[in-house]
Structure formats: structure tokens, C-alpha cells
Image 1: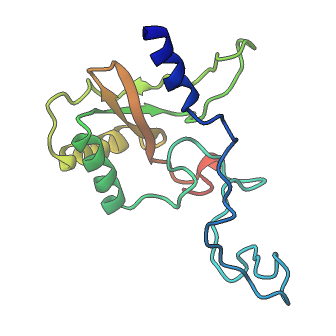
Image 2: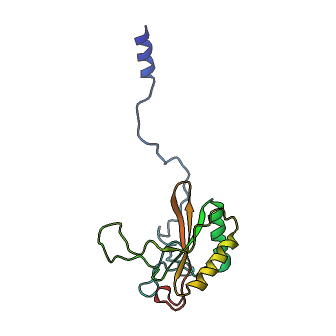
Length: 176
């Protein structure tokens, strides 16, 4: 008796008919007089930001395509870093740019590791503390790039990194 019950339940399932058609769904249509590309614009009236200029200003890493960060912008980024439970750390380098010189294999870059300013700021809860350290690093190394990184000590990874200071007059900063 069991085989006949299984056979009858198997025949009640409808065969696969394909994906549902969207023909029954409401669609807004344009008037037949305009082409489908009639309102396309390249943003001529909108102020757009160029991501990578052909010559001049080098781009570094996160946020480098934006105008230089103000003190308020830096504080907001550091507060985000702290809210995310990441450990802030400052690093500096006179070159400030990743390049290939000593090896040509994929994944190897000179200049990707910068010198730590001090030990990571474990237990830091105030963004102004990080800003004070940034000011000290700028005074000690006025001709070096300084970046702030956020380190996740649980996952053991660096989660954020951005340039906080570019030396004035350097070609890579485009005049800072």
C-alpha cells in the first residue's frame, strides 16, 4: 500500500514550466515620441570628482581620491575606527608610496610596510588622543607621510588605513 501512496503524491506536483514571466507586472512606459536614451547625461550640470588625474597627483590608498581631510574629517574617521573596536596605530614613511624595485613577483611590493610611530594605541577610546599623536609625529618628521591604520586584534588583520598627513611641497601630494 505504501508504494501507491508515494506514486499518487508524486503525480500531483506540476512539472517545471521555467521562470515566471514579468509580463503581468506593471511597467512605467515613456511616451513613444522619445527614444530610450533621450534623458541620458554625462553629468555635465553635476559637479563630478575626477578619480585619477593623468599626471601630477599620485593616489595612495583609502580616501586618497578625496580632497585633503580637515581636522573634523580626521576625527570622524578615527571615531569610526574606535567604534568598530579597532586599535589605532600611526605609521610614517618618507617615500609614502608603494613601488616595485627589488623583486618582480606578484604580491611583492617595496614600501608597503611603514615604520610605526609608537606602539599601537591599545585601549584608546578618544579620537583626540590619536590626533595628538598625529601632531607629535608631524613635528618629529615634517617631511614624512603619516598614515593612521586600524588594527582588528581579534581577527589579526588591518582593517583601515588612510593618509592623515602629507608633507608640504612634495610632488606626490601635489603641493599638499
